[in-house]
Image (cartoon, helix red, strand yellow):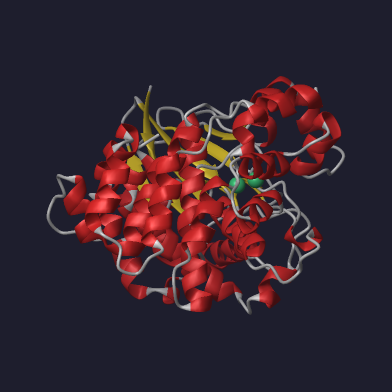
Length: 160
Length: 281
Ligand SMILES: [Fe+2]
Ligand SMILES: [Fe+2]
C-alpha cells in the first residue's frame, strides 16, 4: 500500500486500490473520511477552522482549511470519481481540546458544531466518530477496503 | 534517576558563542556588516544553515542569496537575528526525543512553529517583533531532548497516569522522574547563562500562572504559542494536548476565539513559507 499524505487544510480523493489516505496529528482539527463501497472511491479532508468568513481570500486558496468550504469540495471531488451520495459512508475524527478547558480555545468544539450543522442541512449521517478529549489523532483510510483506522492516546489503533 | 537526568543536563554542549556574539553586535543600531559576517564565518554549520534559511520565502528575499555578506546585507537586522538564532538552535534538536515524537524533525518542526507563533502573537499585541521571545519559544521544549529516553522507557506508566488518573503529561513526568521537561529546559538555559527572561519562560511554559513574577509577559506568550500550535497539530507528539489549560491567558491579552483563529491562519501561511527553516535539523 502507498500512503497519500493529506496535510493541514488539505483534502485528497482516490480510487487507487493501492492508496491509503493518511493525515497526521489532528489536534483541534477534524478529519472527514468518506467512502463509496460500490465504486471503491475514498476521500479524506483535514480542516482546521469552522467558518470561511474569517478569511475569504485564504478560503479561495485553501478550501480545505474551513469546514464550510472543505466539506462540500470533498463530496464533489468524490462524485467526480463516480461516487454517489446515497452510498457514501462518513466517518470523522479529531476536534480535541486542551485538558480541563472551559473558557477559551473552543476551536475543536466549534469545528464539530460547524460540521454537524452542514451535515444536518444536507441530510448526511455520520456513521462513526472518534472526537473530543485531549489527545492527537492520526487517521488512515484504505481505499481498497474503506477501512478507517484511528491512532489515538498512547499509540493505540482502533478501527472506526 | 533524577541524578542521572541532572548529569545529562551538565553534558549538554555549550551554546554556540557565534549566536551570542552576533546578537550582541546587532544590538548596536549601526552594526557593521563586515564585523557580523566575520563572527558568523567561524561557525561553518551556522554559516551553511544561514544560507539555507535566508533563502526561505519566509524572509521575503527575491533574488537568491549566495554569500554570507549578501545575507547580512539583504536580510536586515530583525531577520538576520532570526536566521542566526534558528540556525544555531537547531543543533540541539538533532537527537530524537523518542518518547514524545517519532522523529527528531517533528520536535524541531514544533519548535519552529512555536517560535513563529510567538512572533505572530507579539506583533498582534505589541505591533512589533521580539527576538528574545523568539529564542525562548524556539528552545521551550529543549528539555524533551534529555527526558525523551526516560519517557520512552516508562511510556506505559505515563500513559496510565495521563489516561486513567487524569494527570497532565507534565505532572506524570514529575511523578515518575522527579522533574519535568520544562524545568530541565530552564536548567539548560541557566547553564548557558541566558538572561532570566528566557530561562523562566522555558521553565514556566506550561504553567505561567504558577510563576511568582506575575508581570512577566514571555512565559505567557510561549505558553500560548505552544498551545495554539499544538491544537493545530504542527509536529504534534504523544503528549499532544494533555496539558492544563490556563484560561487566564485570554483575558490577560484580551484575545477572543476569532483572534486565535486568525493567528492559526497566519501560522499556517508562515509555515508554508518557512520550509527551509524546518529542513535544517
Ligand atoms: Fe512543553
Ligand atoms: Fe511544546
